[in-house]
Length: 148
Image (cartoon, rainbow, N blue to C red; front, side, top):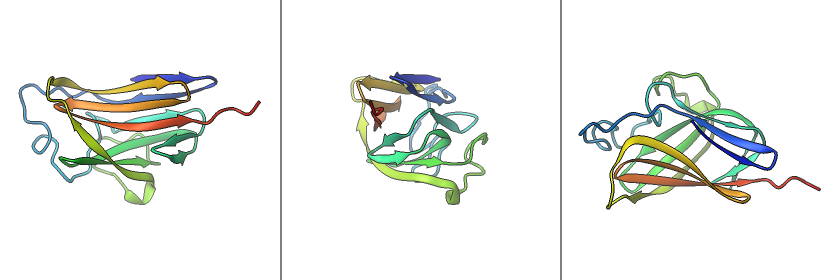
C-alpha cells in the first residue's frame, strides 16, 4: 500500500507486488499492448477522499481500479469504476472513468526487483510513480485547494 496526505485529503493505493525473479518482465510476463492489472493478484485500487486532478483531468473522490496497457514508449493508464476484481480478467472498458497515455522512462542504472508504486508529495502536487524491472512511469496528481 502507498498513501499520501495533503491537508484534509489523502490518496491510498492498494496493490500486489510481483517480483522480477530473473524473468523478462515487459513484453513477456506483462505483454505489450494488453490490459494489465498493474500489479499482482487483485487489480490495483486507488482511493481518494477528495476530488483530485489526475494528469490534469478531474477524478471525483471514491475508490477505483487502476489498469494499464504497457508499451515500450508509453503506458495507457485507465481509471475504472469496477473494484474488487481479480486480475484484469473481467475488465470492462464501459466502466472507464479516465484513460490517458504517459511516457515511459528507462531505468538504465538500476533494476527494480518488486513492482513498486510510490506517491511523492510536493505541496498541492504529487507524483504517482510506478516502477518495475528497468522501466517507470509518472502520473501527476494535483490536490484541489480547500476554500478558506
